[in-house]
Amino acid sequence: MKINKNDVVAVLKTISAPGEGENIIDSGAITNIMIFGDQIDLDVTLANPSLQARKKLEVTILEVLHQKVYEKAKIKINTKVSTPPPAAEPIKGKSIPGIDSIIAISSGKGGVGKSTITANIAITLSKMGCKVGILDADIYGPSIPTMFDMEGARPMSINIDGKSKMEPIENYGVKVLSIGFFTKPDQAVIWRGPMAAKALNQMIFDAAWGELDFLLVDLPPGTGDIHLSIVQSLPLTGAVVISTPQNVALADARKGIAMFAQDSISVPLLGIIENMAYFTPEELPNNKYYIFGKEGAENLAKDKDVPFLGALPLVQSIREAADVGRPAALQDGTEIEKSLVKVTQNLVAQLLKRNTTLPPTKAVEITNMVGCSAIK
Image (cartoon, rainbow, N blue to C red; front, side, top):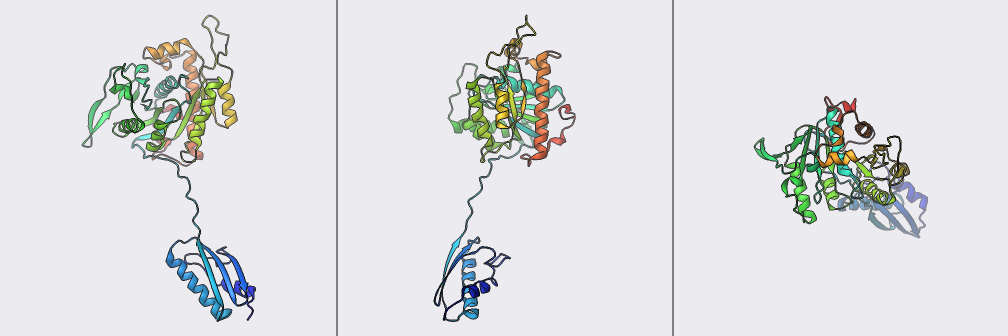
């Protein structure tokens, strides 16, 4: 007997795979039908990987074709299981109770003023009424203790719900934890990645941070073990990249942007800040000298389609203030303080925009902030 292919198709349209609503023709489960005289060859692809589901479908196909097409047909069924490739899951850590937003401050290159800007943004946020903390994650070169006049300080141990926790040290309204609290000024930290990651986790999860609107994470330069440890440990709300205008710094900043954009990390980039954008001598206040190039980071932001949060000048008083442990943001009414306020406001605006357009990566929404005028 010669078997008609249209009859086979019509019969197969009466069969559905286990757990699926559509018939095996319309769903695409039957990928090929070949007929050679009284022989029917079928290629079947299933999404259900269970052996029971495959056997059940094969038996149903055999019975129906024998009953409705030709009882003596020789039927060969080649069944394959379709397993879609696993989606790259973003690396996310567990949230810290009481902390609304965790922002990583990063730079591709060292020496661009990342820690200085972190300290000044933290103080600016604190002056706006926000509750702010800094995690100094620059394990090999911690500088936050110096900038906050905390050299030689040691965190105390306090009891929280029967557990011993580290109490961050506070100054200028900002809570700080740093590896610099546990090492001597002239002591080099010579640790491999796993040891550094363990120390970071202790400062993150064994600390009594309390209620914070912002936790700023001052990352080391580059892209490496510490950065991966942070994104694995914490659900970062977003990241900020610091760069100077020169090409050497911008080349490394590009790598930092690419790191946060990777599918396996997927941390929203809140923006780029250009530091040391220009120099204005005190005796020539109307002059601007673009020592490291002009608008390099701003152009990078346009090129990468990420927000540009603002430019900060190269000012001697910023360096002097950091060296003596009183960051420039404390100097009310100065031009640099006004610049820092503008950059900080732009950062918070991007954070709020990020929280309304992207899924949350943290447990507590930023809208819970009370008394933080930065979000008004």
